Length: 353
Image (cartoon, rainbow, N blue to C red):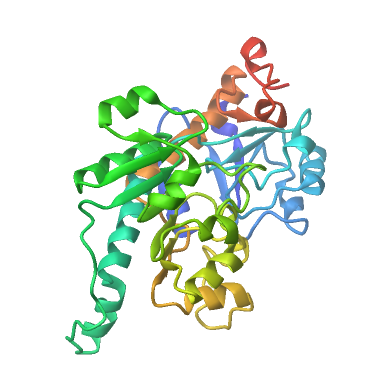
């Protein structure tokens, strides 16, 4: 197949998706025909994929078994995720039918910098000061913060993003405690940080920030029990995955002032709201509404990744994933349920099936 003839249908297309895909698609490597759909991929819209070669989706497209089967019936053999996470895809159903590729890395700087921005904003109450001064209120009562220097940060997950957060916080003169299922002791030696247990992080950290992938073992790892072991007034930051935190338990701890601050770029039920505009209508999610009511909580709508450099990398990798499959039958960024179980056969075949 000539790659110029390749037809891609891209769901949940925002203006910035169209801007960057149109720009990078001009690269001589690509030149594809891209059709943008503003709505999500659902049972009602999956029929639109007929006649296309590839389907491209984002994190809030729920690619369940029913949709996988309909994609396969429509002749779709590759699903391109323009994200690193893939918990929205039924990989079991996809195996043997539709190859699923992702963008494993784009910009650890983007997410790390947003993480620290949440910390600083909550600590120095920048969000509240902004509202005050916009209303000509220049008092500083209630805006008292603390020096980050000398405080202890607990970093859970030391992949590329976690390591970047550590380097930034080290610049503030903070003590760093880290936890990872696969600790990088060479990095620890180079940076002077300490790997320790989760329990030690809970007990000793002034700030706890989450940068680990979501697995069946760590769903709701931040809950009433683990919060009870934390310092009174602890700051909790989550730019990882929403389901790492039991939101109801977090709200209870905020009400009791056990948790002093919460900065959340993700939310466990975010799929119904994040990336959409609900400014003209009420939010029916009572838990989210309660969370937003706290003055010491900052919620951003999954925007930590959202820098020009990151979007360019996501777009280029997505198009390259598609090109490699159709031109070379290679899928270096393929995922499947066998990968997570350590049984992937990609090493010998070039792809999972």
